[in-house]
Length: 315
Image (cartoon, rainbow, N blue to C red; front, top):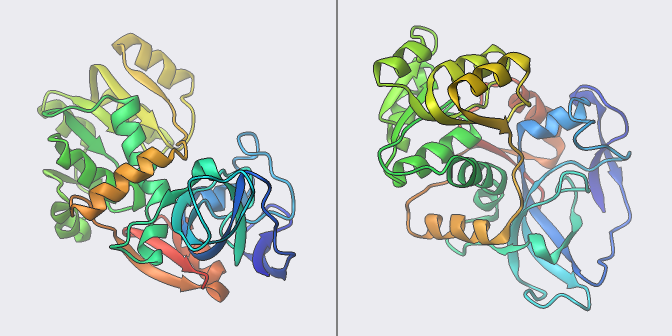
C-alpha cells in the first residue's frame, strides 16, 4: 500500500512517499481503508521531534490522527462494527495513522461517520471536535453565561470551540486578525479581539475576567491567559504544560490549569456527529490537499495562518 512516513525528525522534507505492507487486524481491531485524514499542528510537532517525550516515536512513522474511511476487514472479536461500515476516529498518536491507504485501529476508538457529511468533512472533526468538547465540557465545566475566551478562533480547534461554546450559552470572546472578523462572528463569537490592535487581557478585565480560557498559542500567551482569567477559573492548555510562572500565578488565583491531551472516546464522537446532524456545528474545511501535496499541507499548517481545517485526501 502507498504511505507517507518519516524516518527521522526534521522539516516537511523528511516526509517520504513509500510502499508498505498492508497491516492485518488483530482480534479486536478493524482494517480501515482511509479516504481522508485531517492535518493538525500535532502532526508537525511529532514530525520535528517536539513531542518525543510525550509520544515516543518508532521509525518509520505514519502520522495522521484524524481518520475517515471504510472498514474492509475485522478481527474475530469485533462486535460493534462490520465490513462496509463508514467510520471516523481519532487514532492514538503513538500508533501509525492516516497518512496511508490502510490502517488498523482497535474497535474501542471507532465511531460511525455521519451520513450527512463526506469523508473529507468527517476527517476534519475528530481532533478539533474532541479537543473542544473535552477541554470545555470536561476540564472546564462550561455553563450558560460563562465568559469564555478561545484563542486563535479561526483555526481548527478554535472554529469548532466557538460554535460549541456558543451552543452551550456562553459569552464567547476570541482572538483573531481583522480579516477574520466576519468569519469569527458567523461562527458565533460575541466579541472578536484583533490581536494586532487590542490587548485581550485588558478587554477580559473590562468584562470582569474570563471564566474559561482555551489556550492554544503557547509561550507568553499562556501566562497572560491566566492574567485574563478570574479567580477560580479554568485554563486548559493544548500547547504545553504550565511552567513555574504559570503554576505560581494559577495557584495564587485558584485557577485550574494543565496541559490537556484529548481522548479518542467514541461516545464523544457520537455527540459530535449529533451536533453535525442537527446543524448546530458545521465543518470548516478551508483546503483539501492531495496525497502528493503532503509537504505543502505541512508547510501550511506550520505557518499558523490556517482558517478552519485542512484535510489530506487519500482516496
